[in-house]
Length: 164
Image (cartoon, rainbow, N blue to C red; front, top):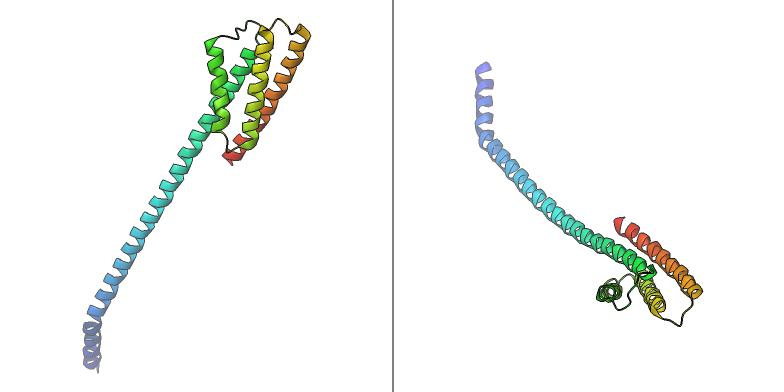
C-alpha cells in the first residue's frame, strides 16, 4: 500500500511539475509588466509635476520683478530730486506700462498696474511743472501711495492664489 501511495505521489508530482513551473513563470512575467507600467506612469506624472512647478516658479519670478518695478516707480515719482526728462525714468515708466500687458490674464492686477503707472506719471509731470502748487503735489503723492497699496493688495492676492 505504501508503494502504491508513493507511485501515485510521484505521478502527481511529475504531472504537475511543468504546470507549476509555467504558472510561476507567468506570474513573474505579469509582475514584471506591472512593475514596468507602474514606473512609466510614475515617470510621466513626475515629469508633468516638474513642468508645472517650473511654470509656477517662472510666474512667481515675473511677479517678484513686477513688485520691484512698482516700488521703484513709486519712489522715483515721489522723489523731489526728480528729472522728468531722465531717460532712465522714461524707461522705467515704459517697462511698467508694458508689464500691464504681460499680466493681462490677471485683470485686477493689470488695472492696478495701469492705475499706479498713470498716477506716477501724473505726479512726475506735476513736479516738473511750474503751474502746480506744492499742496496739489502733496495730495497727488497721497493718491499715488493709495494706488501703490491697491497694487500691493492685488499682487498679494495673486501670489496667494498661485501658491495654492
